Image (cartoon, rainbow, N blue to C red; front, top):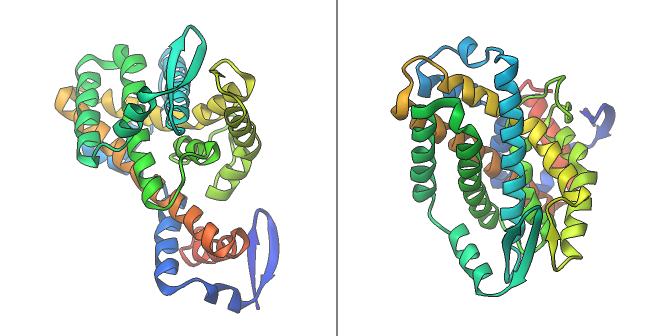
Length: 306
């Protein structure tokens, strides 16, 4: 009998509990734990920018932080609209603050766009990053929604590969949830919990409300409280990693080439987080949430991350 710590509670767990996962699935879970509990974006950005970690992690001036916060919020609202547009035979047409979901061929075209290749995603993300590197902070409000949408498409591909049915609104929103998993907590965020399952738990209520709203509406209004709350909660944490991205792009002489490299690193980071996130969800469907969480806690302790 072993003791593990889960969400602040010490629970006795029989060794037999871990034997229900196959060796291959335990290996996959171990990789997921390492990725989810040790976000490596700062290291990736430092390599791309050729700048030390302390420069990437430096505090940005308040006016810049305000621009980042607004841009992150806008990017998450865009991501939410795109995610909901992938529901079967639906498409998004925006009129003011309203997002109309219509049956038809447009939805099929959007679904096909979501199936574009990983190489294309990275190339397009690099291009948007090159523009950001060349023109700086002034382009963030335009560049960030573009790069975020490209990342979301890649995340959706990974979700499908791990067995997610994106016709379910909850599963589609789980793709957007990945953007809350990419950085550490901060006192200034609305989602201050740290640790993979703590973040998921903090998002449970707003995600369920947003999924319920999406499932029960033929016309979606992006100003609906359920959608705004979910987007804002994700954006509060996503803004942390966007700040790191902006700091990396602010390195003197970074230029277009460096901006492309930074956006590629940014996409690689969230692809890794997505793979880990949807691996855990796949294992939960196969073995049950309790068994996977117990095994996750054991692997986390074994890696010295408990």
